[in-house]
Length: 275
Image (cartoon, rainbow, N blue to C red; front, side, top):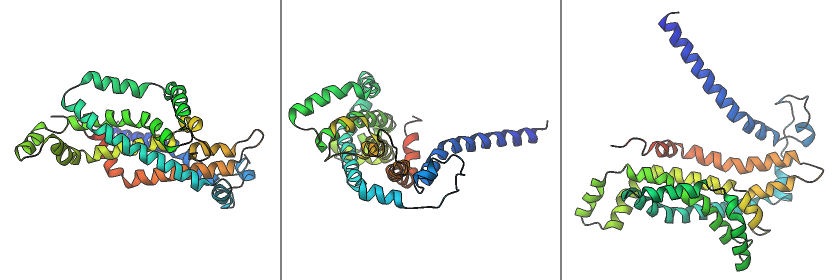
């Protein structure tokens, strides 16, 4: 086999693997989206084709009118955005200190906290918030979601801060900036891609969090992942409503990721090469 034929074969094989992996990742999303426009009878009919149906918006009307998904969407947005903002306020200075002063043991503690299953904290959180009368409040949900978002932000931002040359801060100090001013004006500005990716992933984790909201939320603060349970009963599953609700949950994250994809790519590679 000639060298040119080997190159063509290798290229074809790589493209096949890429498109196959892409198909495996996107097919469930495509099926979910198409099913959200179908009645239950069409969804559970195994003999029909994927595109063999008459589109209907009835599922979305039921989701918005009957199940009040706009309220649940607002609850999820408020909890996710507040958890992300407060995690950034606390996590960015923590990550900076760990990075600048080479606090390796502290970084391992952060990683350990990130690895501990969230369910381990559920009973203590429930007991504390119940005793304080904070169940079914945004405060309880935001604090519990920060348990996931905060260590994640710290762990992502440590290599981003380590990749910024110390000479830039020293130059800022010479020009009259104090430690805080150099951090805000120099370090944070140079770390914007990393901050974007950390914020986006923290927001996604909070937006999709099911366990904490299931136990700590109530009728006032119920979030979207828990609200999906409304479509499942003992003897019946509203597949159309389930698919429409899942699409509503997924769509904001997809749109947000597409809009910020430039920052996501640069943020994921920040700190990968040092020196």
